[in-house]
Length: 226
Ligand code: AMP
Image 1 (cartoon, rainbow, N blue to C red):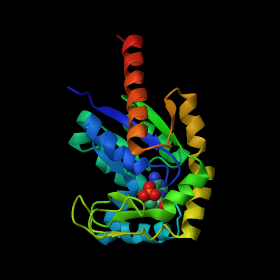
Image 2 (cartoon, rainbow, N blue to C red; image 1 turned 135 degrees about the vertical axis):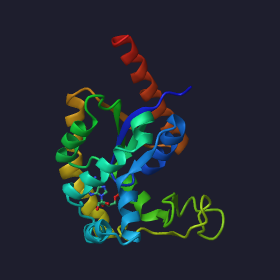
Image 3 (cartoon, rainbow, N blue to C red; image 1 turned 60 degrees about the horizontal axis):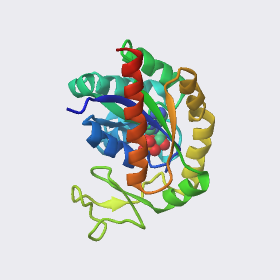
């Protein structure tokens, strides 16, 4: 039996977090919790949270911590995450969120934080070509489109460019990443929970690298705490 896992994947927009989180979710049989997907679903359903979040999202700004935290707290309280764990995608994005997450996850905490490293020139290229299913969030690209005419292979939804993948919003998100999220790398490193993984190459190559470090960290922990 494959044991569950409690993982975070960090990385710039376009580093491949979404793609890798889906794969890790299948590999470790854990829910993929993407705060971006949850917010996009709220926008689509026009809930109060969705209406509030939309203006921040369209401008590439961060949605206020308070809104994010109550949304995430509800999700982490569900049985699937309490049992097998989770892979968090797009959260935390600020030190305030990371501290709040530690409090939410205590006493068990996290297994590992993976920092997916990709050069900015490559993420800009990927974001310009990125396309996404409006219904299930599956990622495609101009270079790797769905099989039939921009119809999602997974759910049959429409595959489009994200409204916040404009040049101005992409630049703003990358600036915010450097300012607010990049400091989390050393924050998690300081508590010995972070590994850096090279995010270039094919999706399969990157998944293999991540699975290797996650499994390796489990083995090390087993030795440390028999
Ligand atoms: P993503 O799909 O992860 O790129 O998220 C899309 C947008 O949702 C971001 O540009 C933010 O506006 C918002 N968002 C997602 N996750 C967070 C978060 N942890 N904190 C604040 N805003 C977020």
